Length: 217
Ligand SMILES: [Zn+2]
Image (cartoon, rainbow, N blue to C red; front, side, top):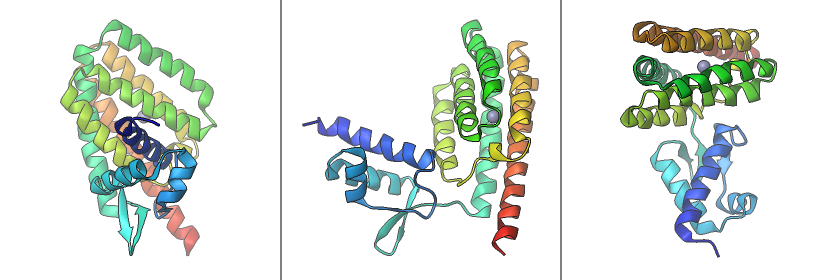
């Protein structure tokens, strides 16, 4: 038997990861027994994890069922505003506080991620790692926590904007500009470069959503 507390944490992390990697998409129904079977975890920790995810608004009720929540247009805009501000702040602080080793990791990521253009899923994961690395390089734990919250809500977006035509290449160019500013210790430029990056990602997402509406009509 597993320790219950470890189990609960595992169940939560497993379900969150499944939402994040779009195994479960917004609107999908989550059934306790199916999750227990899929993850090989008993039902109690699954139930506790589902409650926690519901409290965090990642799951919502549809009658008696729990479904993966989705973001409406206003929530999407609100999320991107907060994301731009917080990510910009992280870049600004990283320009001040990043160690040479942390900058080296960012540089290596830029290099490695070039091989992922054309593979949107892998590039999307690499993008998350890249941003997480900047968050950590800010050396501000409260900011890292807030950004974790923002990124958890990003899991509720059904598609990645990186999948859009030409966006992969562009993403990496924008990342390079961010790293250059952090490396130069220019907080102002790093902040601006990251805000620009988030703004362009948001524009891409709005265009994708517009196309999806058109396709559905
Ligand atoms: Zn990015």
